[in-house]
Length: 383
Image (cartoon, rainbow, N blue to C red):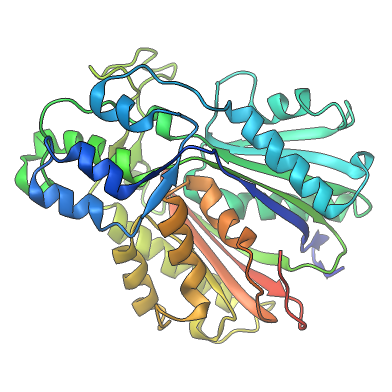
């Protein structure tokens, strides 16, 4: 157990398990549906995000998006979460009574109340009824940094307990149905930008659940130190918003019947700045043994396109085709953007990782970024 003043414990990953919905839809399939409605330039953009497929809890996702069909649920969000939680606990081979804290992590819950974590506990009678629990919600893509930080505090105070963390995102049902015609950002005036964001939403996001079991001791990788950066400029909080459906605007305003999802053109440059600042802060920490990002044994980076990933690799002097960066591209390609689940999916990838110290970085709406080290045992590790 690595203790760090004042009384912090780097959490050790005892097990990780990923679950995705059975319905899967290729980018080629979605492009075929979109072709009559999208301009050629927009088709080229959404077809070259670096995503080949995405999973959805909806059995008829393309028909909902492009043909106005009623959504047909293949699985409930909480059931997906429970499936990953049970798989992770089985891999960890621990008694449920050893779980002292359950974390539910989501920015797209199946329902607003009960919270995801309470829904999970309700559907898992094997968990103690008096288990401590906490929701980490609406932190977007940077959620895992918040989880690692929370686990460090909890395990320092309760070294004999374990933490069950369930990351779950179900974003595809929130994608707005698309009617009419849609064009690339460069082809529309600023006042019509939102229509292009709506079109992008259908291709960019997807659904998944990943569960992790953390402890103070174990043979898996440990995580930490963690560095956060949140709303470095006050206006960064407006880089991406879901403004309606809350108490300030309790009604859904858009004609398509879904909550609005806004996205500023400044997300990419600001996000890149956040990534560089948080990684620099990690490298400056005495617990980090790396001199540059290029020294990392693995580098998990979460973004929304290969173009952004390429730029980050160039900025961090990492070869984009190297094993160090491979998981970042693989998860984007095979699972699309699953918000808070994207980095956990990289951790869960069934690849043997070489021993050494790696880096993890993710930024996203709210606006926040988190970066931390992943310390892989010298003999290597595979989930």
